[in-house]
Amino acid sequence: MAAQDVQHNIGELGAAMSEASIPFDARPQLQDQLPASYLGNVNFENRLALRVSHIMAQYTSIPQLAKTIRTHAAAFAGHANLLDAYSLLDSVPDYEQLPQLRASRMESPSVGILAPTTLPFNETCFGAQTFGAGGRPEAFRPLMGDCNHGFRTCFVIPRKPYGGIEFVMTLSEKEMNFLDKDEEFTRYALRMA
Image (cartoon, rainbow, N blue to C red; front, side, top):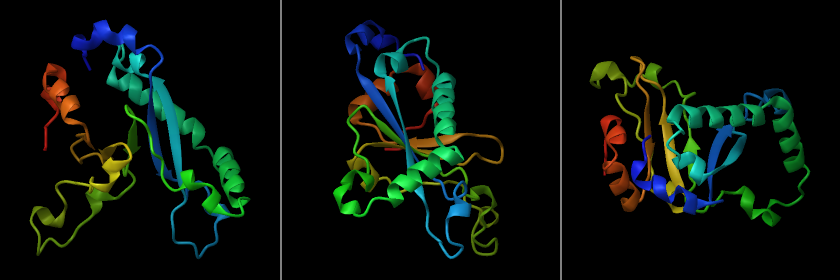
C-alpha cells in the first residue's frame, strides 16, 4: 500500500515495533495426543513482531507482508513445536499463576489476526426453502465489540466461490481518515462504519 504522506516520518519511527497475533486451533495437529471424547479446541497464538518502519516503507507490499506472516506461522505451527508447547502447559499445576494465558493484550500499533478460513462457509446451507440465495450466506460478519478492547482485530473471511478475498478490520478514526486519503486503499476497500 502506498503510504506516501508518511514516508518522510519513517526515520522517526526508529525501533518502534508492531505485533501481529494470530490465534489458531491446533487440534488437527495434536489430534493423536487428545482423548477421543475431547470436543473442545486447543488454541495457540502465533505472535510475530515487525518494525513499523518496515511495514510502512514504500518498498513493502501487502503480498510481502502476508508471505512473512504465513512463513512465520507455518514454522511455528509444526507438530513438534506445538507438542512442546502443549507439554509445557500440561506441566503447569495452576493456571491462575499465568493470567497471560487467558488473553493477550497488545500495545498499539498491534493487531490480532483471526482467520476462520477453515470454516465450511461456502458449503453452509441454512435451508433453500426458507432463505434467499439458495440458503447460503452471502457474507460473514463476526461480532467485533469485545475483541476491540484488547487490540485491533482483523478477520480474514473465507474465500468466496468466485475467488474474492475479504477481511474485516477495526481501526481508529485517525487511522481511517489516513486510509481514506490513500487511493490504492480506497480502490479496494469499503468503509462499513
